[in-house]
Length: 171
Image (cartoon, rainbow, N blue to C red):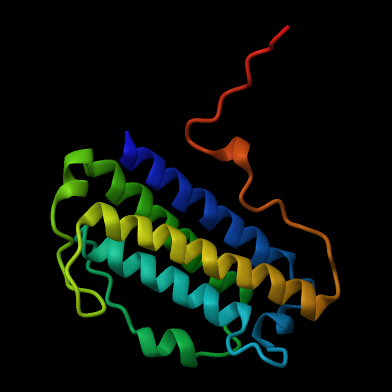
């Protein structure tokens, strides 16, 4: 059951990432930075897609995806359609891989040390979900700062949670 919740959060947030990238009216703004902001939205989208494709798709799912982490931070002016394709590929890797795992797999060691430490698969999957959401918030602020649009894209919508059901009416 916990695995379904983790998968649900990650896929929901990837849908939100897609909405954020689509919400930039001028595609060139995806690659701009503002004072005090190191990474553009395009850079963060590449990073998130590559991170999930590798850590979930390749290491847990055996997809064969080869990550070039440096390129995630060095590439510029990648077209929006390509960013969206990579986000969709990450979502597919997450859905396909996590659908094959069990809650028992969450207790097993994650197959690779990360940051010089070993963790359980469940702990690292939660980290990946939080990492995604952290950068998603950065992209939201980036878009609002650069475009001067306060309009939200309805990211992190609670009714999209895996366990969400209409609330029971109380008298």
